[in-house]
Length: 226
Figure (cartoon, rainbow, N blue to C red):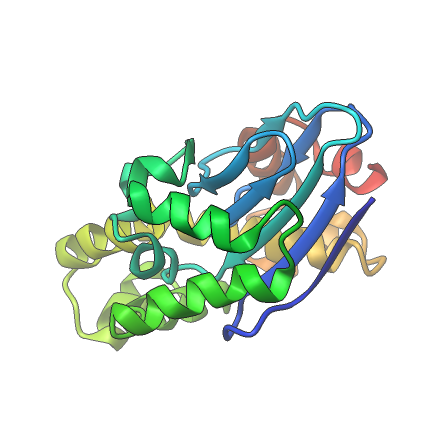
């Protein structure tokens, strides 16, 4: 029982889910999420390098705001690499301010209210670093890292450092994750895996299979079947 819809922040997604108690595989995407759980309250999900296995209890309700790559640090006030591969209570980042947010949201927060929290934080921070969405868009479109660095006017080392703060990892890792997601989206339209590999920029289908397995723990066929 998972649904998503656009949020009131460019590129952000609001999603809801009710767990049936089965483990869930959350694929890496370079994003940070603001989460509310009926069991655990307000949480922050950092950017994952590999698939995260969620073990919610049956009946647990979730509401999430998935922020586009590069936007999360401005909302949460910390570099993305400090949250990499982590799920942390919002209070560990915002302290008393998180308790005030929880009181305001109440026991059954709405997506609009959750998005308003992030919107307010973004406004207070002066908006996201414009480099984040720009680099993410270039890499999502399949641009090589060197070409993306040249286009934004940064050297490789500085781009790597800025990318760790914005996305949680360097541009090569982000490009690899975004390429995998692009390939899976194409495969879900019915395109065969050999053609997907060629169109997404893999050397061959074996390269696609190996990369997906390393990032998610399972082969493409298993993901598509699920």
